[in-house]
Picture 1 (cartoon, rainbow, N blue to C red):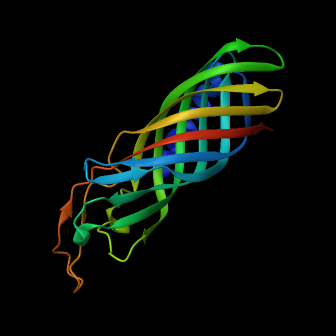
Picture 2: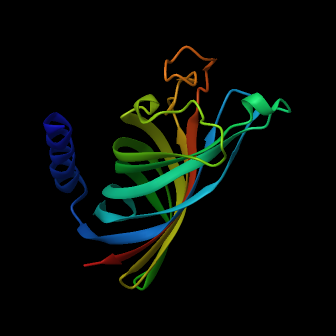
Length: 212
């Protein structure tokens, strides 16, 4: 973690030297995440969440925008088999520390407002998680099955009006947040069926920011 913080500190400094103009602010917003799996029999649905944190912007027409924020996200896995024995349903909730670095371009750049497009990578670190069974049958997914570090790409658009900034982005997972999970037998031994979920997390993000 110390190496990651140092890396971003160097990035912030170098970007400030290169691009000159600097601003920062706070942001809050809504996100809708969906965990996609490799199983046709397991359905997934969007789960609403929120995020809050801070952003830093270096540059004028072309800019770099590192951010750091906490995100509450997740999804629902529904094993829709006709066989009642395997008919489990679980809700996965995850809290993450997210660090995206966006590169943006201002398509319209006026004094009172601008319209921007942006894209960039994001590192995400799981800080808390919860698994809830939504029916009487216990599902196979455990907290230990969730990858603690994940990588994403974000892309989107945004507008600034005076000190307000509004962003709409789509986020695509580059690795499996949940690779596999193993069902337990009634006696508690993990010798049941193994589900190779290969679950990636995609998300819509809407953020409202305030420049300070």
